[in-house]
Image 1 (spheres, rainbow, N blue to C red):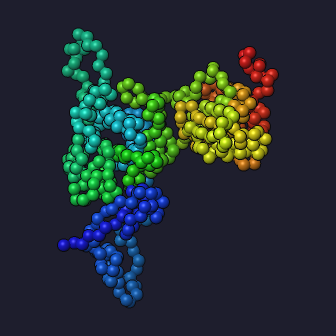
Image 2 (cartoon, one colour):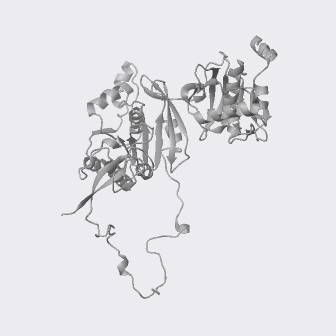
Amino acid sequence: MPKTRTVYICNSCGSESSQWFGKCPSCDIYGSLEEVIVNSSNNNGNGHFSRGGWQSNTRDNNRDTTPAKPRTSVKFSDIHEQEQPRFNSGYQELDRVLGGGIVPGSLVLIGGDPGIGKSTLLLQTANQLALRLPRILYVSAEESGQQIKLRASRLGVGQSQEKPKKSKKAKSEEKQSPPEPNLYILAETDLEEILRELESLKPQVAIIDSIQTLHFATLSSAPGSVSQVRECTSALMQVAKRYSITLFIVGHVTKEGAIAGPRVLEHLVDTVLYFEGDRYASHRLLRSVKNRFGATHEIGIFEMVDHGLDEVTNPSEIFMSSREEQAPGTATIVSCEGTRSLVVELQALVSPTSYTSPRRSTTGVDYNRLQQILAVLEKRVGIPLSKLDAYLASAGGLGVAEPAADLGIAIALVASFRDRIVDPRTVLIGEIGLGGQVRLVSQMELRLKEAAKLGFKRAIVPKGQTYPTDLGLEIISVGKVIEAIVLAIPNNQNQTDMDEE
């Protein structure tokens, strides 16, 4: 009878330990070690595992004089370059995030908070693909077939096209209507049954919703454990690569926002996507953090409506409030997410504090970045902000993490402190250094083109930055943050003139 032993595996980083710790020794996360019983039949008795097959004792003590030659490897120059074929998902935003379309045989992992719309997005995508491809499989391990049918009827899934009112001619041609989508539903949690269905049906695209609810009967651990998630993903990957099946795998997320399970799960797949957004707001962001077939940090934007998710063709309008309603402490920046530029409105509020220590709060902006800019404004510009509360938010809740938003944050804070209105036709682009200087940023041409397309008239950018001159924008270069403050925030006379306009 094979011996067994107990190990403790971290469900965050996947490291193993022979004893339980309250905190993982590798990633320093508390409560992440889980007990796993493994088979020790391959143990050689010295605490090490035997590899089996080819062994080191086959070596001869005499020096091998045979000429070196490859056994299965090939020269890099002998590999012929082939363009990776792709097919459209039916949604341009999803194709953008995937790098231009779906690659056959790839594994895509999608994570997001509960109720954010992961299943809705994939069910709608499956319906679009089933209109053009012969076999699409949707595996639901969390819902029954009837529950999926109820949700699908609300989303319009399963209908080839929207049916208008029938005329006499339409009734006579009803037999020539296009076929319904080739979408197959499998409500199953047993991994072996799912693998048999994949081998039998051989769909072009299969969706697994979700990987944490699958169960491999050979393992004694519960569904969602480290060993179950790892073995299920590995088995699905082998079948997908063998039959060139594209797999979309839904993964649950932890309270920190990372995909639950071992880190090896993200290493096994080809693409990792995160579906983000405030569940109480209408828009959703699909962000790429890993992509073997395209650029990372691309985003796709959707809007949640009564019939599901719709693509957003002009995302800058979402992150811009009404430009006619001018208010102090508002500045406009241009943020770049991958190859997409977004015009975002930043709102700041500086007010006297009611407590011993002032309060700092951010929404959509890094908290440490706000603290750093407040220190620069007080030290280099001389604005007393250390005794005041400071609140900063991005319109629409978009996460703005890049340094190019620094100049807009600083101008919004100073405008709120002085109770002034920044010209709504001006965009601010630049990174602020600790010495108060405005540094260069990347993709300036892309940012300025987006601002010009939306009707902005002036842009304040770092000195020495290269930019096109035929955009119809008045471009002002600054080297210090105090220069940008003087140019962006008008004096009383200019403020009165702007209000009269």
